[in-house]
Length: 375
Image 1 (cartoon, rainbow, N blue to C red):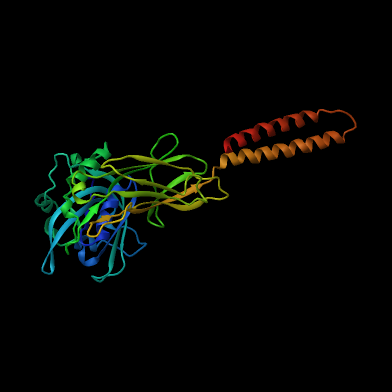
Image 2 (cartoon, rainbow, N blue to C red; image 1 turned 120 degrees about the vertical axis):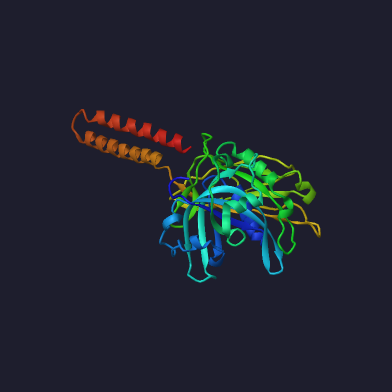
């Protein structure tokens, strides 16, 4: 831990389906993606609560540069109280913004954080008792709480896909159950993200005004969306059906198919789909939608999937360089035409025919470059 840097444990629980889906998204989204958790103020560590400012006022004191540990909490209901049974740390993150909507217990606290490393379950002890020691007095009381930092060996900085698979295998499937007894089947999916045409993974950018991450794409460039569904062996004991994975984008903005669909019929799979923005008249904002749905008719009594429904904001920008070549070609054509007209106006041959040839030559060269570049 550097200086006064604090570690905040944020819980997403089995209280309802939405919260469990939040856990699936935290597991699935690429490095650098921004997630949003929210809690009533009464469920916050008092030390965190007193540091929260109103919306737009920024981060105060210990909240600045805080590291987040995203956790999945399994709890059971005992009479009118919830009893914490198991906690699964899944990702680390960097807090980028947090605020409250008021001062009363029923007001809402919002936390926005940028996902980073997966947690390593390779020989590390994440039993409930160990996490109780790390969280301290607020264990079982607060869903957003200060805690002790993780050790270096507990965070995976390389081979993240392997850590993702191990983490999926480490979560007890019986813990995807609401306190009221409704069972759900998790859909684990490792989203690699977008690669450019050179094969380099693109890191999402952060927009402070919307508090969202987004991808910067260039028109006419080719990108690959890569993902890897994974179902642990115990999946087959929970469900005998497999889901449909769908990627959708705006056909007015992208030249690739409006929708890709894949029915996964294996416990482990990898797929990649092309995303190619069309040539545009202006820079645009859009979304790429990635979601899961039922591929077949659901039999009565079957357990529900925890379906993913992820929107990836995208900013598509024009490539101005090749447009400058086109502008330069038009300028050279105009200069050539002006020189030709001036040369024709003279009573006899003059050196003005040299710039005519020169400007028309440049016009042809720049126009060819523009056409080849534009395709």
